[in-house]
Image (cartoon, rainbow, N blue to C red; front, top):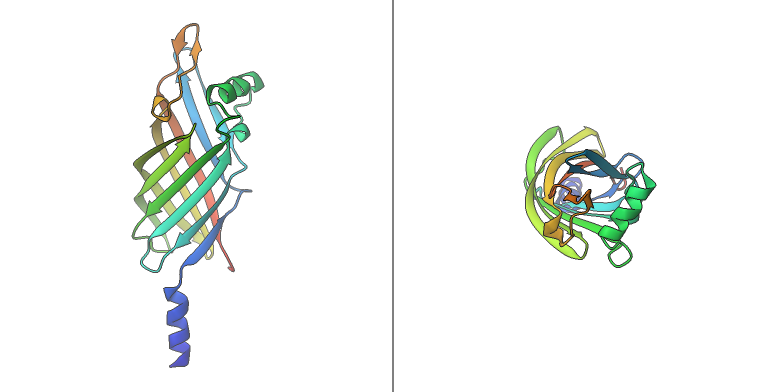
Length: 178
């Protein structure tokens, strides 16, 4: 009886997970009529809590300066465009319901992203898998509006980039204590 009560208490408490920065990345892709480019951040920080009812709360932080497109001039221009000195951080909070910590599940998360001091909230399709006990892998691809974050779209030859910014998420979490 005492053992079952102890097991019930453990199962009833939230699980905490820490982002594995060595395997995680978030990328953005921007398109112009003449070319496209991708900037990737490998220096993310984050945590997640899985509540007993299967609700997942996630917070991920990144620094704007850590996004690398492979072209230092372009990256400098992007830092100016998003006013990185004034708004150095990208913050993402997500809420997903009905998660079962096994197998693979396609679902939708309510995501609040803050960039350039502006928050956008929307439902985002994600895939969550648990390839090994104590490890979770989250992937997804979706679009955000550059202007929706209050960012004036950069131009090349007087032609602005497309407003749609493609975001690709490839995040790994490890369960604390696993």
